[in-house]
Image (cartoon, rainbow, N blue to C red; front, side, top):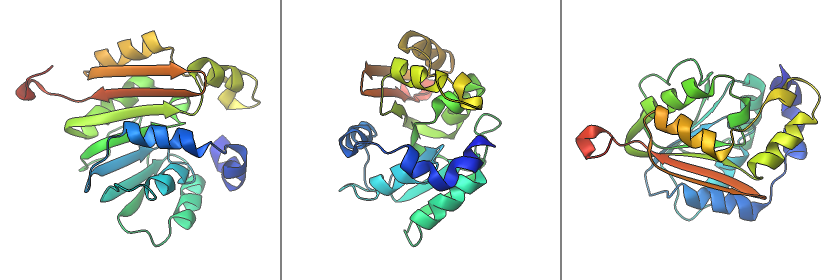
Length: 200
């Protein structure tokens, strides 16, 4: 598997400007005690960044389909309270028995083979009024251009353009969708609101 094979060197391959991570963290609008799912957590770099923020969640689940990536995350986050790990393919099923206030999908969405299934499963795991954030440290065109030049399976992994992303989210039942696509950052925010809460 591509990500298993690159786990040990991933942090060197994918360094990110901390100011952009701060912008993405701010988009999560965290509150004390928030339950957070970090989808495609990789080596745990974004969770580690969140744990430095002034407002920290109480419970973070780091999820990835690469066990070796999770091994690196376990090392990086060893001893941190409120952090757990889950090896799961989020395109297959929701994480059973878990409800989250925030789901962050950072630098991961292009690699999900069935993106519509993933969006539906994210929504199933969100609490009422919960927030999904899909983010990258580059704009969608830059991400896609980069992947197209890569060797191996990731060369086919693309990030949907903003119009398609909005359509996919709407079809999966999300509301209050905000998409920001800049050359150096891409952030999507979408809420789960049920009919009982006054929105569809």
